[in-house]
Image (cartoon, rainbow, N blue to C red; front, side, top):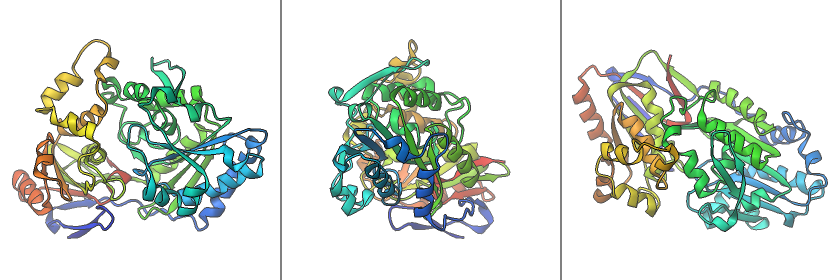
Length: 429
């Protein structure tokens, strides 16, 4: 069977023997909205749980609109113009509106990428600021959560009279779903806040998984931080495999977001009858697979349908290599999964003290898959030196990776394929 996989911008075809294919988990057929522009306009006029955006904007001296960075395929050219039009129509001068890119600890989004995200006209027509989590002078404390997180967020966000977030709801490896409250606490959070939110006690919690909000510690912390910092209005969308909009959920930062998550839980969920020997998944294609750092979410999502001791093969282009230099340095200093766990997870004492280095959480998330399954990365051109820094196998050849897995599990091994990786919430029925 030839199966198209999301891989970079162009995709990639993989071949799996027909007799071994147990399931191909594509996203369920959810019809895209016939008039997304009209749906967005209607959502701004009739939001969930709060007055219309035009009413909220009246009398406000300025506004900030938080958007995701390049690693999230949010349809900003559809969402931002009607939001800006509404704000200006309600009396907020255009030069008093800032678009804040919620980078978290990612690199800034600038130049051609910014034009790609916003559209060339909008990228030069409004003030755009990248959040810089490591710049302490640019963060403002907003309070302490009941879970003990000392929260601080971007000053541009904290000091704005009207705060709006714009995001995309999809399964998230720790927070249950992306979007909504996550754009504040992590996207615009200080470096210290982000470290606390990625502490081992949160990652290790059994409810810190894809598709789950109830009892999810990270979701609870993020919701509290959004309430402390303030979030007047949120606009989130769900999308199909081609990134066409299937739903618009706008209004109260928690109520509208939860409505979107409920819709997403049905529109992206696919099940198998039982765990399989081998799972082949993509990391979602560009821009989701621009680096190995982003690939962890494909492994963690696939592990839910893979047998203990099974094999997960993830295809990720990694056009930017492993990720930013600080992450590469972290990888370079780790000898094995056990040495990492000993140093960063099983460290005892205050669990927050274990969040010693930025990005250690992504390696920690990888170990959640590695502790259950053999993990193999099929990349688009990492160097041998880069592959040697990984705690698991990596190869440019899918054929070799699959052949090795079939030899390991036997000729009747069952294979499940997830062509769009993290976009699908894969579960055992």
